[in-house]
Image (cartoon, rainbow, N blue to C red; front, top):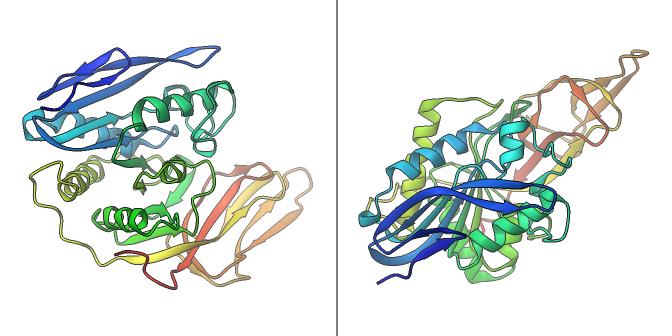
Length: 327
């Protein structure tokens, strides 16, 4: 019989499901993290699913909440930890990537710092309380209210063949054709930090422009159930494997000046190095700054907002992978 599944004061005994909140002390404030703990009646892996890491990304929050209501403990093999709002200040008080508490983008500081800023402490809390002891991790994101995006699954190569193969299998089972991987696990993204700890972890990006669409959320739930089936958590038949188009991140494009952004692309466009992607116009004097593609590839997401600050990410380009890293 499985052990009790505990996060803070929240507990699910074997064969039960518990929903509630757990308080996280962030130093200058305390936030309540909503959780659903499903402790299956049968043995199996522990899978963690988070959403709401950023504000303004609603599809994952909706889908994780729907999945939490759908899962029944007597049908689960193993344990599922669902956190539909991982970053309450950003989700409820803000609408963009940075937290209104301290201006920090949590998905740049994982695995966090328990003695750092509130957002760094939150990242550390999530890793300590949710990911420790997990066997697989899925982090659900969307194109925010200022962002166009074409659906993709992402993960990081670690150089560990077994871990990379398990992660590639999970990414390929998701039913989204485009899989974009990074050549290493550096950086503060959730899935990169998890990979450095030896955990198969994928990033899922669905929806754009802060859209709230029931059909998209339901489709995401179906895909999550398919991956849980592939992992052996559910008896549901896994989805048929999609023919994956493998990509590797090639370049990011950032604003060099503050001003008004006039893009000349949309997500999914194929671009050649040197192509004009748009212009940043300074409203004070009308000066124009051309933004050119630094690499050839496909734009998977980009800035849609009118106003941008220096350093703002305007577009992300991936190129076809030279090889398929999957098993």
